[in-house]
Image (cartoon, rainbow, N blue to C red; front, side, top):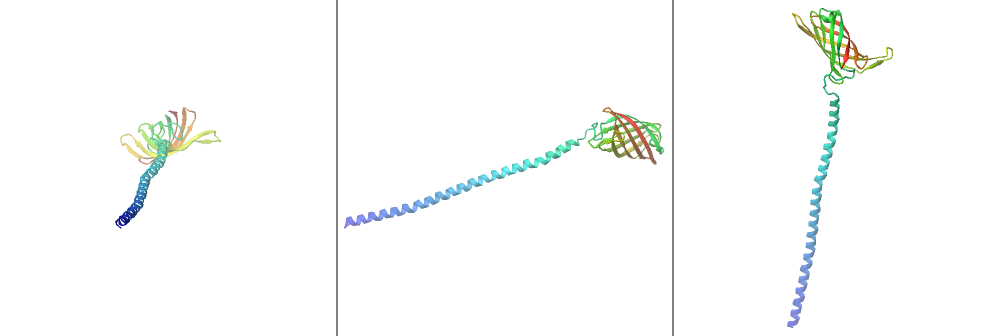
Amino acid sequence: MITTLVQRTYILLACATVAVIGSILPASAENSSSANTLTNQAEQVSETPATNLNSASDLVIESTQPSSAIQSEKVAQTFEPGRATRSGSSYFGVAGNIGLTGNTRVGEGSFAVISKIGLTQNLSFRPAALVGDNTVFLVPLTVDFPVENLEVTQLSIAPYIGGGIAVSTGRDSTVGALISGGVDVPLSPQITATGGVNISFIDETDVGILLGVGYNF
């Protein structure tokens, strides 16, 4: 009787042990699966910023390309005194002024020193001095146009137009507005002929025609 009771007790203990082990194993497996899931999620989160970082780098590279193009365009319009413009080389020369109307040297006949100083591809500075009793200095800034070929005369011409100031010297030095326009005619790689009309507004309206030749530099 006692032996039977002991055997049953062992059987109950064995069943209880098996039940406890059976309940522990699924829990540990579930915990392991949860741990693996959390690990995978952490790895995915850690990879996402790298992808965003690469996208940000691509955006930076793409954004620098337009700025490079703008910089290249700016280089083409670099301010460089003495450079050639699209109308031709810069030059220094002499001319004669034919006065049409007015009381200053612009409206009277006179000897002149002329020049063209290229600033950018499209702009040039064209100071001139009309020498005489009351010397007049012309200081125009002009827009230069591309050279055009004339089939009739077989010459190339480059128009220009602009404005600035005219300064008349003497006892009563005065300053007035100036309108200037004309054409440059390249004759050779070293020589350029030029002709233009100057209209100044000093005391009254003065008009003169300037014809000359310059040495290219």
